[in-house]
Figure 1: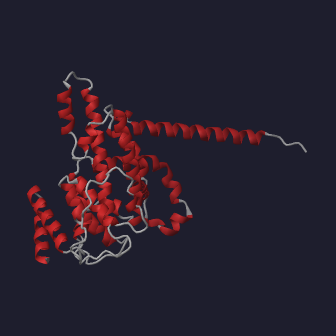
Figure 2: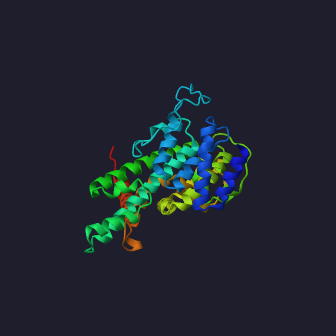
Figure 3: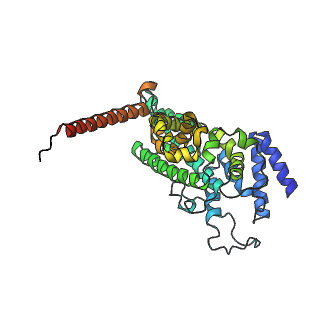
Length: 338
């Protein structure tokens, strides 16, 4: 079994479609032969499925492992028991089976990436429809073009949805992404930071890990980063959300650095730039809406939805400060007669 695992890893390192497919087949067969999976193969399989666009199979796989043994009585040695027999689960359902106290990091990462993959497909559909609406192409040709701009096999159904239904699906995905993102941060708060700067994690070779540790994060990055990199548009969307968060957080950094909490925990060694980088990652899920609007926008950069939101927020903030100053001035001018 270990020799076969070594072969699968060699195939993965080649990075071709054929080698990844062959490695995946080896791993699925090893799981069939060794259900208890003492080699941790189930941690690697979901990301491979996403690389191969086996998106429905990925969701079924993750959900089965999360729900197969709720009372701890499943006999992993009994080959007659149902095993990985979940098929066609609702990918758009609320992922409550992962929103638990002790979530599995690799499962969270896989479902987060899957939801982001579908979200990017919706953005591509929306942009394509905007452009095609200005043409006189036949509907049959438009449909074929729309099918080309989506990646996930699950998005073929989305392509058939009306605009209103597509917006509702987009909203559902956004809500699920926020939930999964929050659960990911709680499970291992170091993952997102290293997703943007993965070199150290990819080069590390830890021998063991504990829940929530840096070593756990490195294993998860190594298992999944190729899937993140190969899923076009996902990292760009997250980077834009981070940039929006950084721009709106710049004015707060100086105040944060003056707080006793920051001084006592970080001291003078942290720079404003480093703090802003951390804050922008921590707030990324709150700015996903901005990035999603930007992704569907075709106008000049200066008029992107996120730029407009920022201008309005700053104007409202300035107006509120001006009103506070006026009220303070009026209070000082009042004369109290005893």
